[in-house]
Amino acid sequence: MKRHFCQAAIASFGWVSAIAIASPALAATFTYSDSTFNEEDWELTTFTRGLGGSIFTQQFPDYGNDGEFMHVVNTVYPTPGVQDSWVIGVHRKTDAIYNPKTQGAIQSIDFSEDSILFGGWYLGQSSGIALWQDDRFYLAGGVGPQVESWTQKQQTNLQQHDFFRYTDNPQNFLDFSINGQPDFSENGSPIQFGFFRSNSVCQTCNAVAVHAGIDNWKVTVHTEDPPASTPEPSTLVGILLLGFAATNCKRDRS
Ligand SMILES: [Ca+2]
Image (tube, rainbow, N blue to C red; front, side):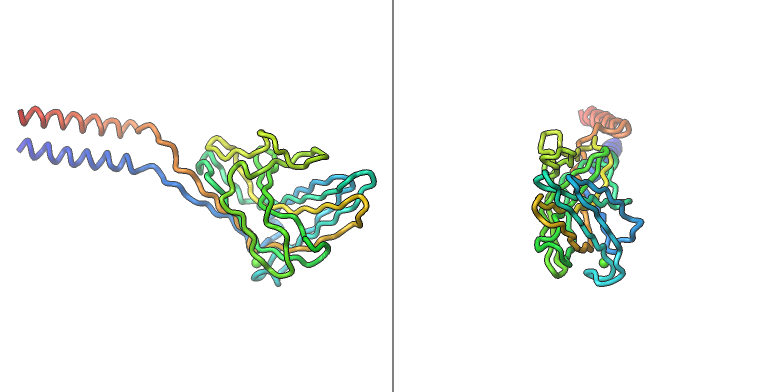
């Protein structure tokens, strides 16, 4: 009879321990997207060099790569004595915010957008994913140039080191130093996602206004498995009780 109790006790505590071991959450994905581009859903920060230029955005109700899209116009002017003038627009979606401290460290990020070139410059606008963390802007380029029909552009498996910090350095607007990267660890501050569009002109070039569109903006965050955690007190009690039951069974057999 006592042996039966021991077998049942071991089976029961073993089940509790199995639950404790299997309970940590697994890696997950979080997706942020927009195919509508309501104007109140986006905020724009503009950076310039030299005479720089301006950025105009507008939600169009139709002719996107299905329905609405955002029309983006970058205008940039040449500056005497300045080799290149720039205008860079960082567009952030107001609710596309990821918090590593509560949602987990970021393992990688995938980005995609549909884009189109309407005119102004045959290479269109430089473009890619942008993010904002601790009042700093980080960019990862590589999805241009646009062409004259809607085309999906992608960046996949982006790591922390693929992003570069925007700076006011007049010679190099991206900071490639070791401190120029965002923090994807579980200690990182909240991150807001978006995209950027930029253009430049040489000092002897003509001013340009580059018209392009964006639709089906999407950011997918892949998280890491959470680190092994210290067992909860209730789990420790279960383990200790399991040891106690096994010891009693051994004594019973002797
Ligand atoms: Ca759309």
